[in-house]
Image 1 (tube, rainbow, N blue to C red):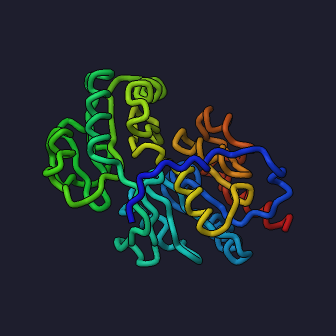
Image 2 (tube, rainbow, N blue to C red):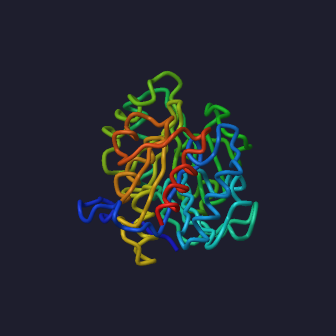
Length: 294
């Protein structure tokens, strides 16, 4: 299922105080949030996630990672086993285990929009290089650095990769990655949002000047809002965790939200609460307290 529509419901409105409403869903980012820096899930966190599911609270992994990188949490799937990947571009069922994700929902980036974004950013930030993330494939320009532990399926200029008859043309594009070797990461994000406008949604989750560009209106928040609406779960019943700018919309939307102790300043400003760092099991700390109150 492909969806390109804008989701306007992912804007939180002040209503009943969230602290008075029992949570029904936990939405957590992975890198820098649920995962420790060595990419492991601590025994304490595993136990906290299992306890939440046992208490009837759904757990969604909400990440910028592609589906093929979800093996890191495949051993910790409880209950429904759904994850939101690619910053909201896909909803994936992880029940198949490592290497066998099933796409439940795809919110693709139209190739026309992707080409517009590349062209506008080439003009605004000369020296930017690109990679293209699809449902199963990964393609990049020859000068794109080895930022990811994988071999690209094809090397070519972004304009060729995104052409209607280009490599991987049968697969939807989930996002494009834009890297600049010298611009400050936050400055690059601001510049790119101004240059691209409403042609695509631009965010970042890397400490380097690496941007993630998705379809208009596609974000962690908007896809999480769709998933919650399908389950009859309101934003007040969601508790969210994150650490980087790609988490800001989700943290703003959720009834309760926590910035990690290692979070970006924009994330701290957006969240309603704060917990300790990812290496100190910050997600588990909040879940344990939440379950004690129940």
